[in-house]
Image 1 (cartoon, rainbow, N blue to C red):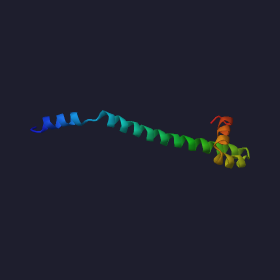
Image 2: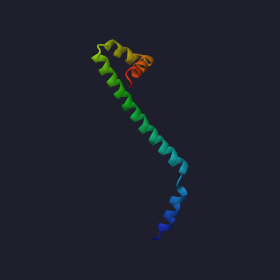
Image 3: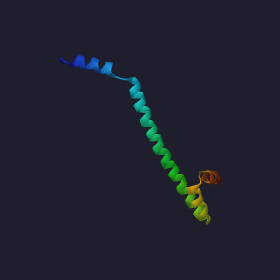
Image 4: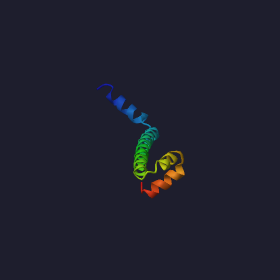
Length: 79
């Protein structure tokens, strides 16, 4: 009880809103990057399966190497 008031006032004065917001944004950015990677992997998996069903495996290899071609295929298959 003796130090409660002092501890309370210190915690109020030491709170750094800007630092807190920076940390929150960084955490959100990391989560977003992770989610984006997962979605990208899932799209690529679907693309490979669709291409393999159509005996277009050569295009799957090209898609892995060529991002513009990969984007064309994503549009073609609505991925």
